[in-house]
Amino acid sequence: MKRVMLTVAYDGTNYSGWQLQPKGETIEGVLNRCLGELTGEEIAVIGASRTDAGVHAMGNIAVFDTASRIPGDKFSYALNQRLPEDIRICGSKEVSLDFHPRHCKSCKTYEYRIYCAPFPMPVKRLYAHYTYVPLNIDLMSQASACLVGEHDFKSFCSVQTQALTTVRRVDSVEVFQEGNEIVIRVAGRGFLYNMVRIMAGTLMEVGRGHMAPGKVAEILAAKDRQAAGPTAPACGLTLVGYEFMTEESDDENSR
Amino acid sequence: MKRVMLTVAYDGTNYSGWQLQPKGETIEGVLNRCLGELTGEEIAVIGASRTDAGVHAMGNIAVFDTASRIPGDKFSYALNQRLPEDIRICGSKEVSLDFHPRHCKSCKTYEYRIYCAPFPMPVKRLYAHYTYVPLNIDLMSQASACLVGEHDFKSFCSVQTQALTTVRRVDSVEVFQEGNEIVIRVAGRGFLYNMVRIMAGTLMEVGRGHMAPGKVAEILAAKDRQAAGPTAPACGLTLVGYEFMTEESDDENSR
Image 1 (cartoon, rainbow over the protein chains, first blue to last red):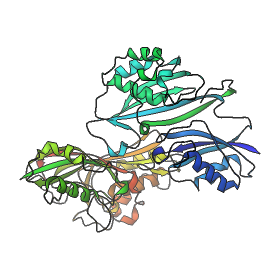
Image 2 (image 1 turned 90 degrees about the horizontal axis):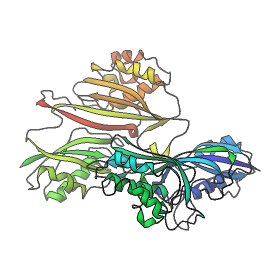
Image 3 (image 1 turned 30 degrees about the vertical axis):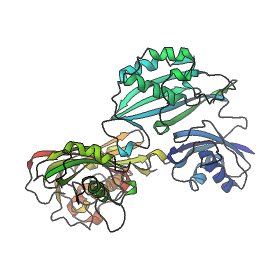
Image 4 (image 1 turned 60 degrees about the horizontal axis):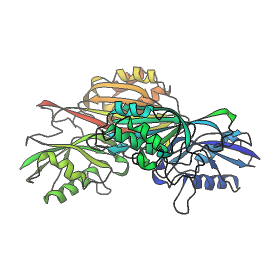
């Protein structure tokens, strides 16, 4: 028996998110099915980030156990033969049997993209949220500064969360322009349910002048989802990458 | 009667190109149908660039004549209500009745994108050609230099062309990296059938080391399609923009 780690990239447009659902195709479901066909075993992958419906990834992580004789680093090639074009394995390797992608120290980076122009751009529509409202990046950047650090992000968490604690540490938030796109890049150890999308929705309120940058500190302090801005649409969000630290984590609440 | 110019952006993935075809949905067909519904007239747009199946545009140009009382600058809003999400009008205005988008001096810019990495990236697959073969940008850039200027581009033209002359002037070719993407940006007054895609296919041969950069001058001199590299796939090509010069052109062969 060995444990294999996959780096998984996907276009989330046509999926009901990562996690198995009673209805609708999911990334987890497709991976389990293709791995089952490949190994002849019943495989259940464990995902590092259980991204929402419509959210994309350039490097999510999945691990699974197998008795297959396929070497760990060959799974990427074998799986890509079977996967649909909108899911690709960008790397695979054997890891230790006690490696769990949600119970070890990691830093993940998300990007939220906003295409901001008088008219929408068809080639951007699947991977960026569109708005015709001009956004002030300087104000958004100012507002984002107070999100960095360890805070109780209860105001930035869906009320549907099952997390034991809503305290998380955000390592950095950058807001920058790329052509007509505004990118909000957030890095941190763990994120709550909808956290980045609520941060994006709130920073957009600041950018359009509906909310003062200083208000974001008050929102954090309120610990109330109602205080923050709306949850920005899923299509703008991409999990861009994962970095695992060497030491095991003792924090059961990272997700 | 007035003539209206539209700036048209589209995701070409699901279309059989710009031009009306016996089978398959085209950009021209969708525009004619939506304009017909909007005005109650039979409308036939004239496109500036008749892009191939699968090619994208951020700013193609179409003109049409109408007796409608809708002001020229309002057509963008009215049409976007009716068009599918993968076609958007980014601007509209009234132009003089003798304005013809293929018979006036213009400069158009195309970008050919190549996603170059050990594994394909799902969120890039629709708008960039994928290759796992490493490409040397410096060699591609060297090779591209001799394409700039007025030349007989017969070697870089599909044999299916109906052009009267294969002489064209290319104003610039830039080859640069954007993350894992290599972008070939070509600007010029007019392009032959498949010209940018054959240029891209040839520069990729240089980039992978199968062809010396100096070979491109020989290919031009050969005036033979067989001498050049393959036609690169359509999905990597995007017409990014158009610029019209003020004076009317006397050149009947621009397309």
